[in-house]
Structures are given as structure tokens and as C-alpha cells.
Image (cartoon, rainbow, N blue to C red; front, side, top):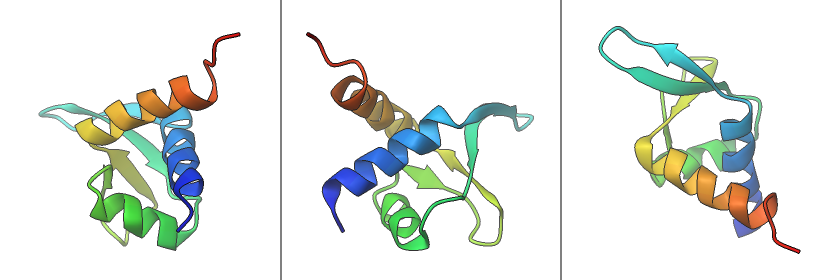
Length: 79
């Protein structure tokens, strides 16, 4: 899998996410509108989680942190 595709997919998941109250905590959730092979790898790397049967996933703490790094890398470039 191309590294940039995984990074940009995680970034898109983050940018299109919303905060959802699960009762005990709040999570950043996003729809699964991306290739399943990319989602599977992001899940294996523990950046996202959720049921394979659900239409959405949520970002883990590590996934949120990585997505913010990728935002700096791809969007907030200096000069």
C-alpha cells in the first residue's frame, strides 16, 4: 500500500469526522467511504477502530494524533 494513500485517507477521515458522545466518553467518528484495504491497514495500525458491519469508524487517540501530524505535513506547509 502506498504510504501517501494511507496518510491522506487517515487525514480525510479526520477532516470529515464529527464528535459523538458515547455515554462514557466522546469519540471522533467518520463514515467509511474509503477503500476497505486502506481501512483494514489503518485498523491494523490502530489508527481507527469500529465494527466491520458498521457504516462508520472512529479515530483512536493515536489516529487523532497522526491525523494532526499529516495535516501539518500536507495542508499547513510553511512558505
